[in-house]
Length: 144
Image (cartoon, rainbow, N blue to C red; front, side, top):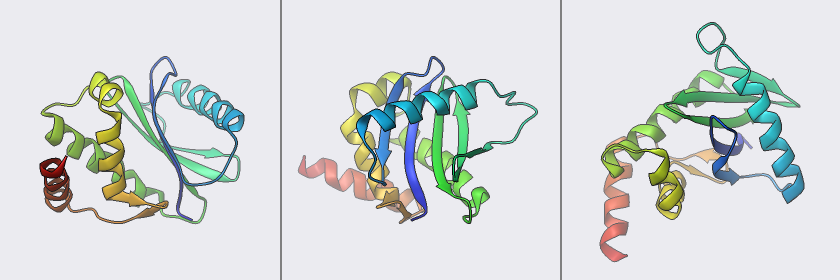
């Protein structure tokens, strides 16, 4: 499996969105999120890369405004390819919400999950065409 989980955290370490593609317990998820926040928030983002070794995997993350978008991938996977998924996800959110902010993610989490499911299914990357993804999401909105 390529992506093990996707997490969005704010600067204080509060979880804003989490999608787990591996089966782990709820207490282990909370501990993982705390560890991730400690690892990422302590790094100098201007001088260090966006990749961190984490247990038997690798974290790929990018910070946008006050949010950290974090993907956990296998060690064998191409981290640069997955680093491109994060800006794609943010661009789609930005287009859909006309300038996304943390509150959009918190109060419209069900829409954010739907957008994420258009990009990643079962931990595997499905589509990277922004226009196609947005068209499918707008089509869903017509039925909702």
